View 1 (cartoon, rainbow, N blue to C red):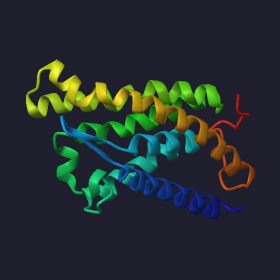
View 2 (view 1 turned 60 degrees about the vertical axis):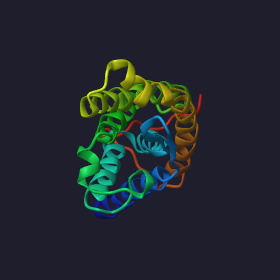
View 3 (view 1 turned 180 degrees about the vertical axis):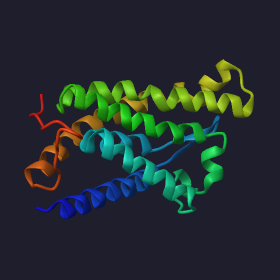
Length: 197
């Protein structure tokens, strides 16, 4: 396969994961006591980073945010626009970038196995929750306790469930894609895949 073909295939896969993130964002459960809904976005981020690694997983999330900022309704509850990103709940969206970067980086430094993916995705739960809650508190001038109640605590159990799913499905899909020659690794991106632990 030529370098151009490989580049095109990679771009298609990145775009696919940006689209998957937009679709899973619509799996949304509004909370009566919080402006932040429970969504499938963090599951999509975990999948993208676990399957694609740091570079391309992060590219997929950046593309997703750019599409949403441009006005395509890919954010939770079919919302879109730059105003969502800079609004009170925008901290969660912005934090998706370091979340994907961390998961991919951790797996590249350790190994692409279920156990390591579970560790990476579980730690990563706290990145958007911490940044998003701080952003929410600043935007609404909330106390720390009120901000934690509205933007942090309600999402912990769901976050753990999504971390397990992202690790399990992500490693499985990654191995299948590599076996089918649909995903390639190199020393500048990801490590070769190892079997699920």
